[in-house]
Length: 351
Image (cartoon, rainbow, N blue to C red; front, side, top):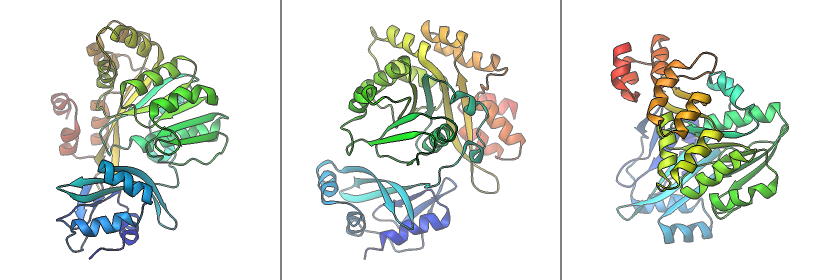
C-alpha cells in the first residue's frame, strides 16, 4: 500500500534531514547528518513507489520518465518545502531520491565560511569553481556566495541549472533563473545566448561536458564573473579534470584560458560534526602569478606545494590544514579526519 508522499517529505523537514530515498525492497530512508536511517514504516514495493512518485509530476514528465528511465526536476510543496528530485529505475522498479532545498538561503556567516569567500565574490570577472562529491554542499555554498552579492551589489545574475535549485529574490540584484529542459535546451545552448542577455554574473549548475566548460571559460575571459561546479575532490585535480576533457592538441590553448581566467577553486567535503550536524572542510586555491604560470606550463602537479607555501593573506589553504584545524577545535573526530582526507599520510602525520 502506497503512503502519502507529501507526509513523507514533511518528515524530512521535521527531522532536519537532507534527503529521502524510496527504493523497493526496503523501507523509506532519510539521511541525517550524512547517514541513512530507515523510517519506521513497512517495506516498499515498486508499485507503491511509482504511485507515490507519479502523484507529484505532470503527464509530460511521466512520458519523459517512461521514455528515458531518468527524470530530474525541482518540486515546491506549499507549507512543506522545496526539493530537488530524481526518479530512476532499479531492477525494473521505480525509485526516487529527494533532496531538500532550503527556501531561506543561508548567508556565508551562517555557514561559517572562510572570509576569503567575501573577497572572491568582489571580482569583476573570472571563473570561480566550487567542487566536491555529490552531497558535499556545493550548491549551498554557491547559493550563499550569490546571496552575498545580492545584498551588496547591483548586478544581473543569470543562473543555468538542471533543475533550478535555490530561487533568489531580487534584492539589489536582478536574477534570471533558467532551468535546462524547461527554459533552455541545454547548458551549452543557454551559455551561447547568455551574451545577448547582458549578464554580469553567470552561475553554471554543473560544468559536465566539453561544450559547457569551453563556454564557461570563454564567458570568464570576456568580462563576466562565472561560478560553476564539478565533481572533483581537490583543487589541482579540478584543473586536470577540465584540461582532460579536451583533446591533446587543444590542451595548450585550454591551459592558457584557465591560467588567465581562473580566480579560485574551492574543493569541499562535508564531515560529521561531533555532537551532531556536519562541517565543510575546504581546500581553497586562489590563483596568483606563480600558479597561473604552473597551469600554463603544464606543471599542475606542483600547485599543491605552492598552496602550502604561498598563503600569506591570500586565504589559500589545503584540505589537510582544514581537517587539522577542525580536529584541534574539537569539531571532528580523528577517524573522520582520516576517512575524508585526500592525503591520509599527511593528515596522519600531523595528527
